[in-house]
Each structure stands twice: as C-alpha cells, then as structure tokens.
Length: 134
Image (cartoon, rainbow, N blue to C red; front, side, top):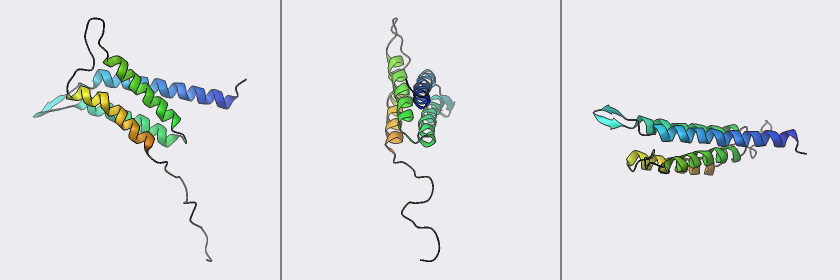
C-alpha cells in the first residue's frame, strides 16, 4: 500500500502535467494575437512564452526537484504538438509563420534552459565557516 507521501507526489505530478497542458493549449490558441503600433507587436506570443517561463521557473524554484517542472514542460510540449496537427477539415491552430514557428520551438528551448539550470542554494555557503575567533 502506498503511503501518503507517495500519493502526494503522484497528485503533484499529475497537477503539474495538467497545468502544462493548460498553459500549452492557451498559448497555442492565443499566440497569434498581435497589436499594431506602427509595427505588429506579437502580444499573444510574448504572453504565452512569459507564461511558460513563469510556470516552469516557478515550479523549479518552489520545489527541490526538477521532476514537477519536467512534467509541466512535457504537458506544454504535448499540448502544442497535439494542437499543431491539422484537424479533420484541414484547419490548423499553429500556422506556418514566424509566430507559429516561435511558439512551436520556444517552449522546448525554455524548458531546456529552466531544467538544465543549476540548483540555487538557499542559505549559507557550506564551505564558509561562521563565527569569530579564527
């Protein structure tokens, strides 16, 4: 029988994956939003990539492990990959333009950087002695 710690980790993992699916789906639907201010500004793409950074970096900083951030990244990549496929009538949510290509590649690159970043130590440096007298 699994203990409460194992059940908690399972729930956390599933929740991280589902959050990744949600962020990936919302980003796929909204990444084409632009605003004209003399030049087109890809607000949807910027917001979607910022959401990916916030989710993955937040999970990475909040937990001691890379597992939850990796599961969220997997959810994002799965959502983008599935929604990039053409539907039965041939319409696509991820068109072949600059924003579509950036959204197809961007979350994976962000995940690689966030997951590969070294662990940040919280607290005093273990190699430094504290105290006076030496």
